[in-house]
Amino acid sequence: MTTYLKRKGPCVCLAAFLPVFLLWAAPCFASAGVVVSVKGKVEIVSKGKTLTAKSGSVLEPGDTIKSLDGSATLLHASGRIIAVGNRETFTVAADEGAAQPRQNLAARVLAAVKETAQKGSSPSVSGMVRGGSEIVLSHPRNSFVFSRELQFHWTGFAGSEEPEISIISGKPRFRYSFKAKMDAGPVLLPKDAPALQPGRKYYWKVEGWDPVHANILSSGLAWFALLAPDAEQKAAEEMAEIDRLREIDGGAKKFLKASLAYSYGLYHRSLEILRDSPDGDDGVKNLLRAVQTEME
Image (tube, rainbow, N blue to C red; front, side):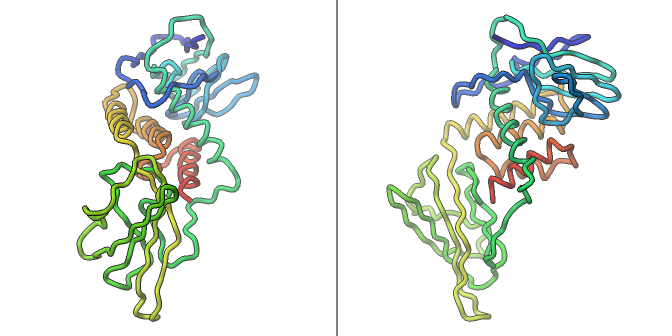
C-alpha cells in the first residue's frame, strides 16, 4: 500500500531528482512523511490532537496540516517533496497506487528522524560528555568517517612535541602506535601503517609526556570506523543531490543532509552541518542533541 499527500492546489514532485538508496532495502513504514522545514505558524491535526509543526514532525495517514500564517516543506514517503503555502491545508491519505520510485530516501530519513526525535528529546540528554581526562579526543570521536577525512585531533594537551597515538581493535587483534609530529599539520595515519578495514570499529587514544609535571598524560578511548567505499560514494552522491534541489530552502537542505549523515553513522558530518545552520526549531535541536548523544 502506498500513501499519498492530497492538498488544495498543485504539489511539487521531485521524485525524479532524488537518489535511490541501494545500501539496504527500505523497511516498511506506516508513516506517510516528515516535515523538513517550517516558517511561521503551522499546525498538524493528528488523531484529534493539534500539534505545532516542526522540523522532524512525522506524518501519519489521516493527519491534516494547516498553515495558519506561514509555510512548510514535507518529504513524502514516496520521495516527493511538497511545499505547503500560506493558509493552505491538506490531509495525508492512504491510497492503493503504484509504488513510487525513490521511496528509500524517505525511508532512510524517516528512520533517522524517528530515532533522533526519541533520543534528542530524552531528559537525560545534556550534550557532549568530554570525560575527566586532560586530553580530550575530538576527531574522530565515536563516529563513522570518510576514509579521506581520517585525521586525528585532540585538545587539552600541549606537552611533548611527539605524542603517541595508539589504535587498537579486537578479533582479529589489531595493535598499532605511531608518533605524531605536531608541527606537520593535520595528524594523519602514516602511509606505512597497516590497512584499516571499512566497517570495523577501532579505538584510539593519545599519550604524551608532560614536562611541567614530569609525568605521562593519557586520554580516554574513542572509537571510529571507516565507511565502506560503496557507501562512501553513495553518501557523497546523495548529499550532492540534496544540494541540487531547487524547490527547498537552505534550512530544509541542511536538515535533510544532517539526517542523512546520521543514518550513515557519520555523526561528525551531521554535527558540522547542524552547527553551521541558523538557530532551528525544536526538531533541529532534537537532531543535534541526538548526534551529541551518539558521540558521548
